[in-house]
Length: 306
Image 1: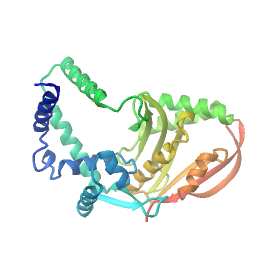
Image 2: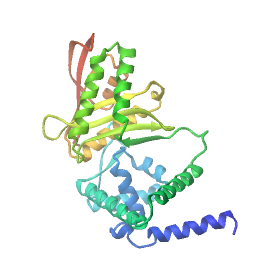
Image 3: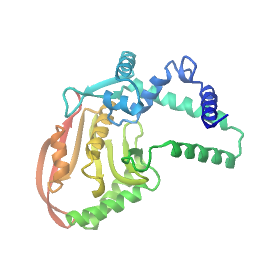
Image 4: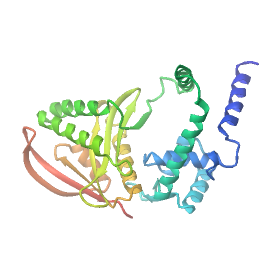
């Protein structure tokens, strides 16, 4: 067999191994395509139908019919896009989030069964080979860099503290108290995070962290707070800020929050313009002296219910 036939043989074997030809994926009552849509929406990235169809390589009409079935089943919901009244943001209902968690557990159990009894070095070698295949089949390095949003992981907190301290000192003249505040916010998030309704995203591109945004519980029921919204200078002007904001707002809606609030300073003009563009209202602006400089502290908010 030549290389093409050998790849085809592997694909057929792996398709059988994954059970992709069965009527219901992972015996969960969903097709493979429906399960994949559920997995994508569970990440809360603020997908529109068009963007999701392009991301998954699906025909838009086919995806539309699939979304209709999932919506009728009570798993998917649509909310009005904050900037484009003609578009809608896709998200999972509470039942959809439960189904996503069940699918994840079933998928992990399936893979755990495959590797059960294998030695750790063999498992590590298998994973390395799979990653090598993925890298070899990825787009050429000359293609535009892809942005990946990941959950907060080991090492991210230290990076966030350092970047906030360095950037705000250089760009706004903040002293070390601001770096200490960021450290306190992150320490509290790591220790007390409610994974059912709080999330932190780290934006990655070409193997490097380039930004972040967090959604956490506010002081009142059904009130969410946007925190730690950061873009490195080299990541600005590429639409990442809007993508992060869409992701945070979509996640907050999906978790049942009615309102999203944030605290910032007037000097952060690009961020303030982005908030205004997306329908946030400026609730207050108060002159303060903080972090070694004179500032105008601002509080913004937006309703999340239709």
